[in-house]
Amino acid sequence: MKALVKDGAEVRLRDVPSPKIVHPLQVRIRVAAAGLCRTDLYVAEGTLASRNQLVLGHEFAGTVAQLGDQVGNLQLNQRVAVFPWLGCGQCRWCQQGHSTACPQRQMLGVHLDGAFAEEIVVPAGLVYGLSDDTSFQAAAYAEPVAASLAVLKAGLQSQQRGLIYGRNRIAQLTLRLMRLHGFTQVEMLDPERRNEENSFDFVVETLTAPDEVATMLHLLRPGGTLVVKSRHPRPLELDLQTLVPKELKLCAVNYGDFQSSLDLLHDPKFDYGDLLGAGHPLEDWRSLFEEARRDESTKSFFRISDVWDR
Ligand SMILES: [Zn+2]
Ligand SMILES: [Zn+2]
Picture 1 (tube, rainbow, N blue to C red):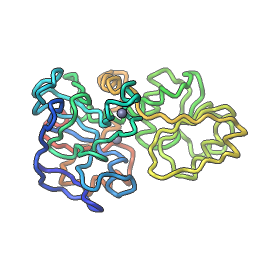
Picture 2 (tube, protein in one colour):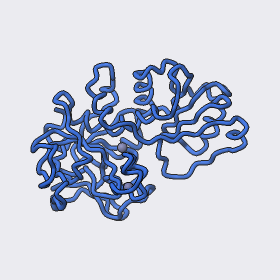
Picture 3 (cartoon, rainbow, N blue to C red):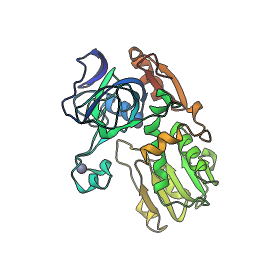
Picture 4 (cartoon, helix red, strand yellow):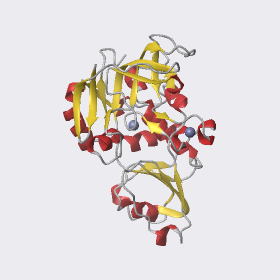
């Protein structure tokens, strides 16, 4: 099969053997659509540590091509999406359903072979069935939606005044999801208003250049909350001379519920079509990677099968 492989410092489209089921609780999936994410770019360029040789990609949807012997809850040819993080399944955090905090957590496309390929094998526990009215492309968007939904875990009040810091599709997505959940006083960052000291009850960070943290702390009112959302690959600096006197709260959130994000994708009140870009064949990966680095206004997709948008 064709697969976009990171091989040391290089990325190449290669013919590789199709993955095989090696455990009775695994599922082989024929990938239809896959989204390109900042994480993929970080892995490709080596700013995020990853396995040395692997298939990239972690946002995807497709159909079940083969079931392991002990998989009971899925069917052949079923349309599915996949949550891309695996825990060990044994530790206290995994047992509490918090597998992304597992000390042995692994992510598809970072630590394990990912989805920029015609097929992928994953544990059945990560696989979610799709409703018929969710296209593969929309379902491949479930992971970013789940990541944005995480802001609802930050303990914010819907009447509070909030700022989404960043001007990109993730900021847009987060703004829309918060408004959908009753937050009426949330706005996007207006670069002209960076000087409005002590203005906001909370600031949600969606992409941070290291020097912007100071601006966020400045904009927060005393006692306000900085919600940290992005996974910037490098450490950021926090000015404790601001943080401590203002008694600010820091709250890092990772994912909301994956099933809830799939449900939202066919909720008519959730308007997101304009955040999805066109689909490109794997062969166009170079130009797609370049475009994704330059312009973050829409999500870029690989159309891996002809039915990718159905
Ligand atoms: Zn992603
Ligand atoms: Zn674990």
